[in-house]
Length: 463
Image 1 (spheres, helix red, strand yellow):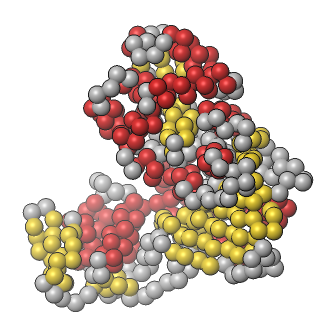
Image 2: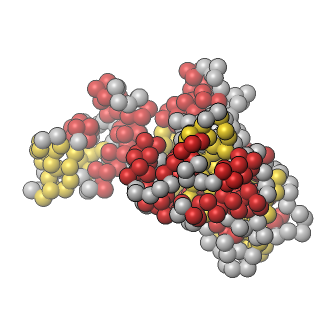
């Protein structure tokens, strides 16, 4: 746990500002720093080493999580600063080496965010990550909007990123987190960013720490939403129950008790569904039908559940060393079968309290499903050009294919579905892709072909 004293957070902040930490991160990552918190470690290290500045070791330590020799570090920071960061719990002295306490410091919108290294990090010391931050955290954060003077509730706070962004302008923010380690990190991040007077972090489960007389203008939620098999340990930050809606339903049911007459709610989540509907949206539509709620949902991404099951099994095995992966995948597929679902959808849900309206769905994700049958346009000509293929329609260049795209296109006969195409081509590509990953590859290629105007669907679905 990090020690929550201003002396320690101030020491760290002074160090970060002195070495122009934010500017260096921006130089290393470019626009990528705003899209995804994580990066290729080796590439980032080379980028740091290519920048002519004198604090490369402290950057490698704090941003990459790379252990550094104490001797090298003391050439860049004072012994007093090092001692305070060790006392705080941020750094650990291991004989002649200094390493972080399984943490790194990320940047987002000029905020310093102390978080744990992800499970797959090269130097991680703990495969069970409590303070998760990922793509979903950034997607919710980039959509945070509020009026000055607003009172904001940040549920399932995690690292505290949503509450901290709100705290830069809002009058008051209450951030709630159940996990004790995440609560500790969110509290420290408030101190580190000088927002402790505006952002109050409370330990507890969803609405339990909220007082009866507290009402909020804005409510932001990034809840656990991963569907997980019963009796399998999974990090609290992701476990959404077997249908992925256990926490989501509790959040929706509690909104009427803490919302003002014109409150706005935003939820970033992932939900199960089939080709035509999404389970949680069906629940939300039914729950809100007698309320003065106007609901909008944007579908931003879609993954086949066969692929999701494999990804989930790989991650779960990191925190369950004795996990029978094949049985886990089989159990997950049984859950999907029982629920009659095929895809995992990423959603941004906006709810305006006090406005009557139906639930509106906007889909900007891949509209292709594995059962869809693609049909190519007439007069398409594909010519080999070194390692790629030039695609022309009526002598006009429309784009370029790699070998996989060319093979996929060649199977468009008006009868083969995407699933059929994937099964036929996977043996040729089995060294690069699992069956599930290749299905996703086919879907993505077909989506690109549709955007080029080369194909259309023989049969269409709602989502």
